[in-house]
Length: 384
Image 1: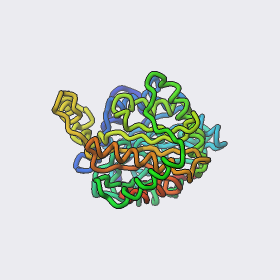
Image 2: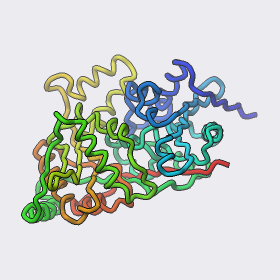
Image 3: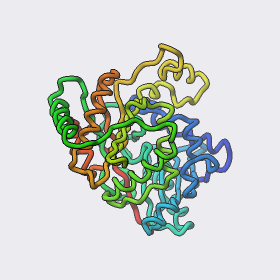
Image 4: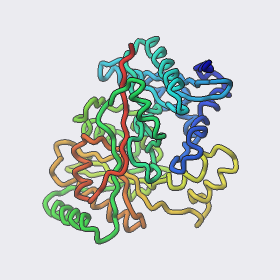
């Protein structure tokens, strides 16, 4: 007789600890897994501190079998986004489980019940209460660890989503790799394109103005909503989400590699490059135990001269206002980035996560000689 699976909401500090540390049960033997930083993940799920809770509500659940945790899920209502697009979707995430269809089904049933109780009719995800951090299910690309903000899932998740009755939620997301060693033919071609743009147009490539950070966030907020409006199912960004997205830049980024493009005093483009900290974080066990902080001091360079410089520069957003598509400003941004990154010792650039139907990034990536090396999918399912 099968052992019953019980799914309970997270209520106590012990429940939260179980929820937060469950991924170690799934991934601890996976050499490609980069453990999430537990202090940051704890903040994400905290209604008093998490950015998501400024625009929505959420509950967390743990599945138990014979006294052992066997899966987790989060069900959430993004009230701001639902109001913007006129839908009634339940966002689900933190969807991790042992390789057992009964466990996965029990978790989805719990999320569906929560959704119905809140007047919602579709499950959409997975998103871990953040539309830009480690979302989706990995379809392909298991030859290297994910870069910063990219997700990683076991191979059995893809057939399980189909077995659970989910269908593709929107165009897949991809990661592209660009070799930036000097002499690469594609980059030489890009440099010629960029030089022609410099002669023809009066675009200004600049660093962020840290003395007026809130103004820069406002500019980026407007740029995001203008530059991505053409994408399927796009809804406007909430300013708080933009602010939370770029806040880490001030701590980890080299401002020479956070590029804005201006034209006639107006911000028309944005290209941020940040060190791929996952090259270090893969060694620090999510800061789960006090001893892990010593590893962080070594790998993240907290102690002078001990840090290891990442080989990869991660670019998480490529934004150009639609009226400036085809003007060459994107080529100018990428050429500037490639030159500066190479001068600072980076070996390759990761472009992720971009939608496969975004016309700008794949086009520019092609000029840079980029290749697709990972692909993720999000899913939808109508609740019966």
